[in-house]
Every structure is written in C-alpha cells, then in structure tokens.
Image (cartoon, rainbow, N blue to C red):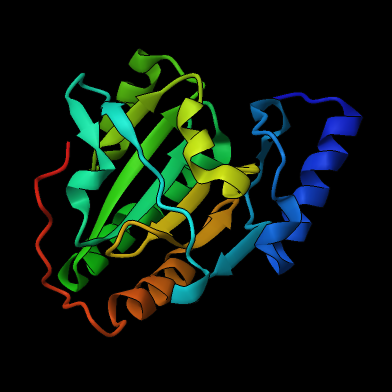
Length: 205
C-alpha cells in the first residue's frame, strides 16, 4: 500500500507517540490512508483499569453474513484483531493468533477479527486457508475504527484487548507475537473482581 512521504512520516510519528502516551494522538481524525503495514510491533501499551476510557461498539455482520456484536462477548476478555487478506504481516501473524486463542480460552478469553479494506471473497478464502476459528466483522470501509477514537489503528495488523467490561485494556500496532499477547492476556484475565469462567450475555457471531 502506497502513501505519500508526508503521510508516512505522520503515521510513524503518531505510532511513536502512542507508545509513550496514548493522549498524544487525542483529537486527531481517523484517516485510513495513514495506516502503516508493519511486520513488527511498532507501538504497544497496557492500560491500568483507571486509564481505560474507551469501550468500542463493534457491530455489523461477519464474513458469512451473520450478525456480529462484540458486546455479546461482554464478561470475557476479548482480543480484537484488525486484518486484511492483502496484508502480508497479517498472514504471518495469523498462526500465532490462532495458537494464542487456543491457549487463552481456558482463561475466559474470546477472539474476534475485523476485516478491513478487503473483498469478502478474498477475506473468506483467507479464513478458510488458515482455518481461523473465531468470527470476523466485515468492515471494508474501516468505519469501525472510529469506535476506538484516539486509539484507532495506526498500523496493520492492529490488535486490541478488551477487559471484561468491554474497555480497551491494551493494544498492539503491527504484528503481535504469541508470547507477548499471552503475557498481556494472563494479566488482564487475572484482574480482581472477575473469574476466568465468566459467561457472556450471549454467544458471539
């Protein structure tokens, strides 16, 4: 994906700022043209419970046309991964996400994807090729990114961890490793006041 030098520099600067302070990007408009494709994590942050101010609403239909609403998973820790079938780092990252999903399930963790800027047939082929076990919201316009406000994706893939109240508790811009994701999930799943076996209000996708 090509971007102008000026937009490339802006995306890098914003990602670097978010790594040290999420508020550095507050107030900026979400612009998918600034999205950087990265095979390495370029920014990440875990938020304390008192820092969690964003509860994204993600709803629509999945790749098979079924209703999708991340709120149906409330009560679980939820991993939300933004991806595209055209994104090489997404392809490299997906097997690690699938392994992490299997290992984290006993902790009360659910996974969901958000497929962006893609054709549905290509996204469906990707999901079949990798045998992805969790649903993905189909969002070719990337409209769902607005739900994350100043934490909107700045690099692809992008991965968010929502706590059991649905708040953004951690994020990774760029490809995440199985080990780094599991370390964050174990910490959030072990937070006081919630059991690993918490049951959501309804079944997702």
